[in-house]
Length: 277
Figure 1 (cartoon, rainbow, N blue to C red):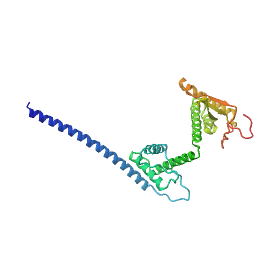
Figure 2 (figure 1 turned 180 degrees about the vertical axis):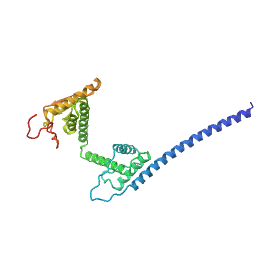
Figure 3 (figure 1 turned 135 degrees about the vertical axis):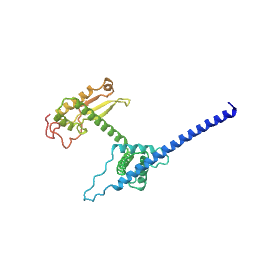
Figure 4 (figure 1 turned 90 degrees about the vertical axis):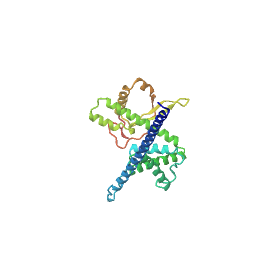
């Protein structure tokens, strides 16, 4: 084979490589364009749905407010947190109202970013979620100015423990042989309002070593026995490792100051003048 033929062959190989690279670049550009078109189509669809929604005549009654889903609220928080890292992003001004020009601009920025990412939430739901998120920011700023941030964190942790306790009791109840009527009655009192008060217990080095439990003074003995049975049933399904990870709880003689729920079953709660168990 001559030198000229080899050179010509190398030339063809080079052309094929360049052609392959160009084809790859074109495909990537096409994919990017398609993604942007899909986002625009989704935005147009949401806007059309908003315009085509029938306008109901006012009946004189206040229309129920639209509630945002947990998914929408989570997307709002995540996107706002991500945007805070950008130098060109300006945060909410909590000293102004939610509807101020500045805060309205922040809302539009967050919403546009979400829609561009492919989030499929209507304008009304995004607005509702944004308004709730703004309120949490405003409340947090107010607590910080009054020095109550740590107090709020402690309260949130206490509420979280109570909700976790309710979950464990409910799972334990399902493992016991209560009939449908019994489960319905017990389910009514397996809520935060009927849980004992708990406070964290720390050692001398500030490490949390357990919890102090204060019983409810108005709780009947029957309710206490049911809750204890549900908790024991829940613990039986746990592994040894899971049980060892749980911090101990010590019941104090001091009673909780939690008030009775407004509407309560007589079998579970004593009234003010009832001293029987």
